[in-house]
Length: 331
Image (cartoon, rainbow, N blue to C red):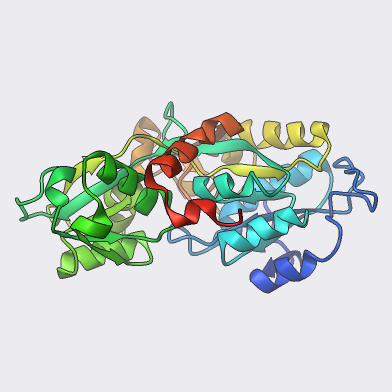
């Protein structure tokens, strides 16, 4: 059931998406009324390359194959270089299904006719979300709480990152620390580079997504035990959603949601959706560690669960606290 997608089915880069944005969407008819899954020539699925996946297309292949089987139409995959490009393509109804961050969905929801339908759960029985850590060097005893960050050098990832900037910024301000006035800010550009900058002494505290500290960097040999110490853990941050265009008919959207939430990664492998490309379940899967499974996107998702717009209202509250410039982009 697993198959390699032919080269013509893979369009990469911002140019491909934005050039296509000039016409009507593949899931919509010329009059704007959406076709059903069987009537459309194809559906377009877009995702953003991340630090967590070097082979983005392959990581989504089991989901794409399951959708093609259920809907009976080809799914064209597009790897796009920025969240903004995907949002613009969805505004123009050129991307029917997309995966991007919680904050990007917050920006998209006011401009594009889209809705979230599913979000990944990384552990059996876990919640659809992630946390951010504030970490210091292992031998640093000066910082033990957010209040201690005054006067220090801070590594954030990027102003558009929920885990690497917005949630930490909101929590710092609630703790009485304004980084713009009471600290020196460094934007590293990524979670892994924030940790590298911290270890190099370029900042005193780094705010990064939990998966990089608990799993990815140790697995890559880039973070050894004791090199960093956690001094803060964020509230739960909504997970990156799978978002569909509401120009697709309701029945099609329901079928997409039902398909992506139907099975665990292990069950997907049992059904042959990644034959020859199975992975072994990671340590964070607990008693499911080592089980043969399919990848389900850029993270080590155990499964996808249903999601709705209500799940992402947290981002609005973060924006109310931070009043960050990125929160008003596109308004």
